Image 1: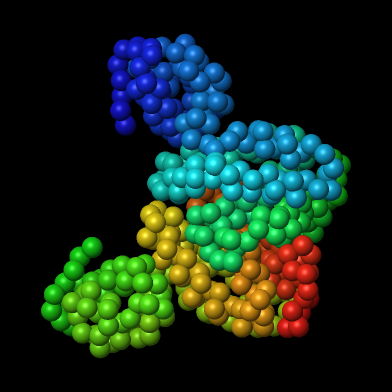
Image 2: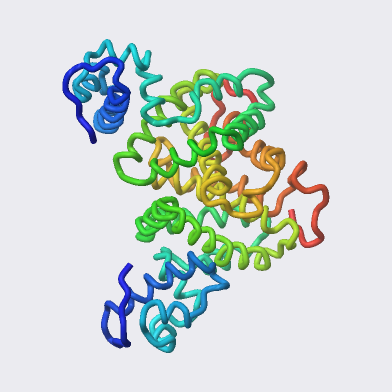
Length: 209
Length: 209
């Protein structure tokens, strides 16, 4: 991992140095434990420069992960509207990203996520801080059921990403996206807001069927 | 990749040479196109030695993939019994393998599957020849609906493997396996033998709900 010394504004290498330091620091300390100051020190730059280049810590994290999109946008777009269709909207928006120009970045992200222990740790931090923390309140899920519901839904999304875009197994890989939406939407709907007997004994008050 | 010349029965390196040649040949030619003869030539051994060490081409393929189990056994065990519970049985048996001593091999298999283009090709061949071809007739699914149904179910299984055992995102990673069975079993059931409106216009005659 390249380490730079001295502040070199305007140098494109500086941006890469910050991202490399961010990846290392986020993987080592976790998202919450990684300070902009520590990331700046690792890159040999002033913390102000990190803010200048990347804005918030969230945005720096997304850039470090080379995320094809900000999950917050997907979550907001899917959460808006009829709750009876939230699973379908999630799957539809998810496929739109993967079927579009962001798909290649998504494949690269998944490939790197499972490539080594430290990149897996980074990906887990990504799921927890960028997806779980936002989706639980945004979908009005309680803290008791929300996290398991979201990770179940995420497991189905990751599985579709793996089977359709990484492994490319037929006929799933070439099926029209609306066929996948029709097949997978109801599962995601159930995980997010449906009855899950044997999983939760009682509904949380916020749950909408 | 190590290439050996000459037949050296009893040499443990010979076994590894055959497996290395098998991986390369299966990835390059596909399962159907890869002959035992070509694999033996690649390893510099006599074809009879390949049969002696590994038995059938199926068994050689499973050994080359370092598969934690023969999918045929999982499929047979899950397919036996009440059709209304086939999804639940699949998920339960799948989790039993991953939660057991085979889990580490499963994680290694998934990691290697997405590591490079050629290992991904190999994994796709594995899914098609060892899972699809067996599960479609074994579950009495028709050739028209069966392959998509099985790959949808596989997408959910792969997603659980990724989220629970590779990425290890909580609370999914530590949830009791029966909780996962209760949550995911009905999805797999629906993919395999349930109604899928918007996916298939008509049921196939062999389909059982």
